Image 1 (tube, rainbow, N blue to C red):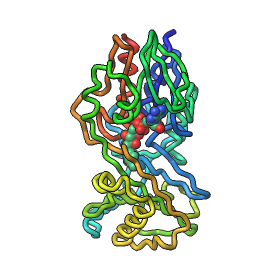
Image 2: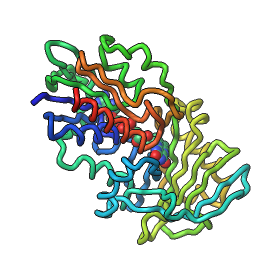
Image 3: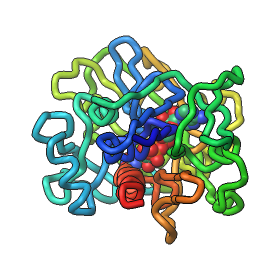
Image 4: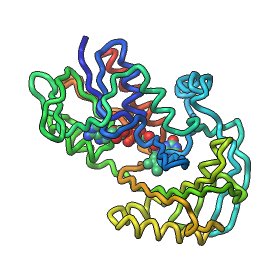
Length: 325
Ligand SMILES: Cc1cc2nc3c(=O)[nH]c(=O)nc-3n(C[C@H](O)[C@H](O)[C@H](O)COP(=O)(O)OP(=O)(O)OC[C@H]3O[C@@H](n4cnc5c(N)ncnc54)[C@H](O)[C@@H]3O)c2cc1C
């Protein structure tokens, strides 16, 4: 059996690993402590925040089929949020999200999806791949320069700028990878011990440096506290990604107070996550990359669109091609 190293346990890497697991010996390397990549959840004491992807849509039958067992097992549910659109401080649209089309969430939190997908796989957490070198086989090295394995195939399922830092330029897509521009995003997290109702659960915001506000605790029916999750616009975050984090918190809290009657100064918890590679606009390009001669592949949302379904399809379709190679 050929050995495959998958770098990255986000949705694309896990989708790929699941496709290959019966036919290859698959090892997934993940630099962080959890599964799911940008489909992430932060716990701060009693407060829970989905600080990456907040929910997802399903557009293809293939992905609908894939998530069906997750729905049946209670890993994924529909978010029936009270949704509004806010344009320059005014609510312009107001509706309840329903069954069709559905907006799905992981239950009890988004990271349940990565945990489900990683079940039964050999995933090495907290194991960052720093370098990939081509000898008679692919050799992987960690940050200390130690060899962490030799593999017949390597697939990188991480954002493009991070791929370039790691792979040798024998790969024939190498020069094109740098043209994929990913946008940044900040996630501001506010936790309050008491229950609050601001009249809606999720808001798409225009005309501000904030693009999204959700009452994250509305996803948890039994929650006895309130958590707010705020995403900055990609444009503002990309301009300010290297700023001091306390300054960013202060700026976004102020921006939020101008939009909704939330007293940010009385929050019991304030957290911030800066995503340098958060999102990419829709691409009209290949879904993945496979160099069969070098036994090297690339997948990830960045080939398609910054969406969970896109990441899944990129990894899954690369797996299909590897199985017929
Ligand atoms: C703030 C934010 C909001 C979003 N909102 C939505 C939304 O509402 N709906 C939606 O559908 N999508 C949303 N997305 C996009 C969605 O999260 C992504 O499209 C999808 O999760 C990408 O999956 P991926 O597998 O391609 O990449 P990633 O999730 O980035 O996975 C890559 C993995 O590789 C790991 N890694 C990186 N480098 C190394 C290394 N050297 N060694 C080992 N491991 C490494 C990372 O830790 C990560 O786990 C959002 C994203 C962000 C950041």
